[in-house]
Amino acid sequence: MNILLIEDEPRVAAFIRKGLEAHQHTVTVAYDGQDGCHVAMQYDYDLVILDRLLPTLHGLEVCRRIKSFKKGLPVLMLTALGTVRDKVQGFESGADDYMPKPFHFDELLARIQALHRRGQTITPAAVYQVADLEMNCYNRTVFRAGKEIFLTVKEFSLLEVLLTNKNRVLSRAHMAETVWGIDFNRGTNLIDVYINYLRSKIDKGFSKPLIHTVIGVGYVLREL
Image 1 (cartoon, rainbow, N blue to C red):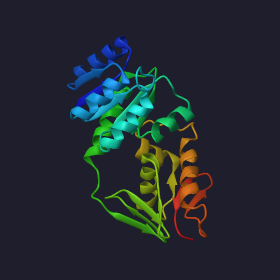
Image 2: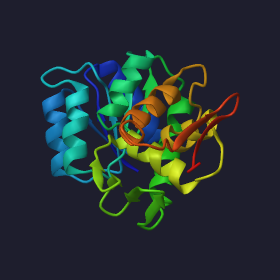
Image 3: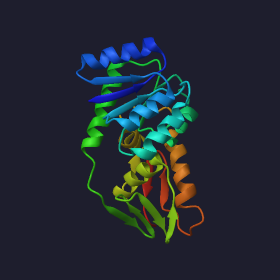
Image 4: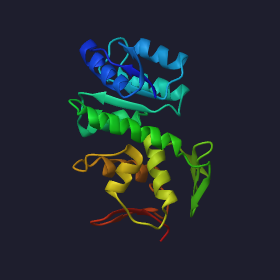
């Protein structure tokens, strides 16, 4: 893979670069946010590995700018900021995966491969519908009762998983692995946080809720 690494610590960048190149990846390094953003826009990459605490431009803003121009370019945030709130902020900015430092290099390689496989197995564009909720995966729009609903990247992905498995109860582990990648920390409440985000947009203000909790199991999207 052709990888852009945006990391301001030279020793960390050198360690990651050496390890990735040993596994036949090509790595370009940018040492600040502005430069990383510029390089990402100018050249083609298969993946961006992005730190958050960067000089000149914060990693969250770098991610937003990259995703606004190259929505299909996967971004893996690799950062010392590892609380649930930090992860939520990262995913809200458009990150496809989030990995706290310190990290095991084998896990980083596995996550990179998972993102690569995910990009290779994108399903054809489709329209999904349950009751008055409609999702168009081609133009990435969501409507309920004719009203457009605006979702973040991860909210859209999570809703897509629920819609493509309508009437099927999904575990938190399944949703985490499908939307966020392998080895997701099941000890966090990130899935519940995002389900609440979706409910506030999909169900709030409408007569019939579509997202339902199955106690002890997970969640299901269905029309009762």
